[in-house]
Length: 446
Image (cartoon, rainbow, N blue to C red; front, top):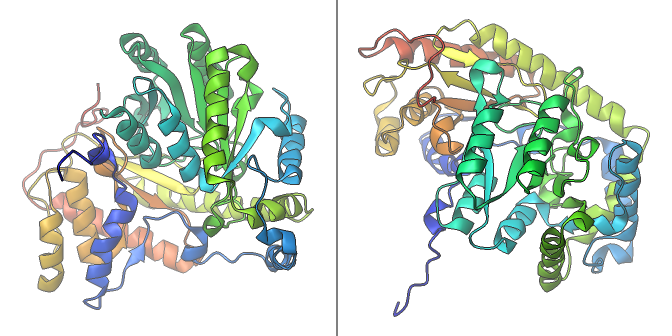
């Protein structure tokens, strides 16, 4: 082309969670079965959407106005329901005017980072969720800035690391929290949330809290939404129905804007998000019509409790099966349906491998780069058909490990995956020439 057409941040757009699917599909074409532990789609994994939810959707779809545009901010009844529920929880009070619907949180994330001033940076957790980290890095045309979640401390954020990086990078304008966290399943304690709010207040920042899994926190996790501790700090909370109903194909998410009256610049930024949505006209109408009817049904929260109890039990079983391996650090998830295993320093070597059929090895070999955890993940896929996501390349992390899901509804199949994963780990770590891992030391840890 006669002029440059590629955005300078284009190379920062990477979504390993789905990119590994192409490799897995190529292996499946050889006749090898694949066990999908990479994508967090409960429906695709086999969870049944309750009949009563389907009936509500069917009834709403029969209404003519479900085929019409919604108001740009979203249907009044959906925003009124969300605001009322939010206000009942305590903390900051909002109105329907503080809520803006998007076509899923991916749409919201893209809009938020695109609307930021080119110099404004947003610091997020490490490990990072790639939709946030890639969008932020692409916006800035520079690597995503992160604060450390400490696997040696149950994945709690290193607040000293966070504040030091805020001080060292004056272009940082906001802090990202993902609560419950993806990929670790960590739930932020109230005192940790309050400490992050304090850092934001002292350094004149705003906060983005991705709470897509907030209603999937486990009993006793201490889950608190940002609104309960935000005080007067400007913030944006993000929620949706993809994981809850679950209805990921609906692409229905929304943001809640807090304390826009406390800062003129933040208020203008919030208005720019609405203006950007106006250019698209609105978000999809049908899921908005369904939302208050489903979430307001007496069966909804008991239904969520049943799902959450199953995830909690699987998380604890995963620790029972995998947690005794000395080369791994593993904590049970306390929310969402993901867990992350971290390899201790020295556990992984470039010459480790798992045996696999020649036709599968021909597919796997070109994928083997320098990242040692990615090498394990691809060997695991080729040898067992278990598809997980490497931590370093999949979640913008300096730690080596992998994320797997807790979604398999067939408990016998889930147990088989855990046992096969353990066997593969033992075989892989025993292969090649390696030194014993040093406890308490992590690859790339500061």
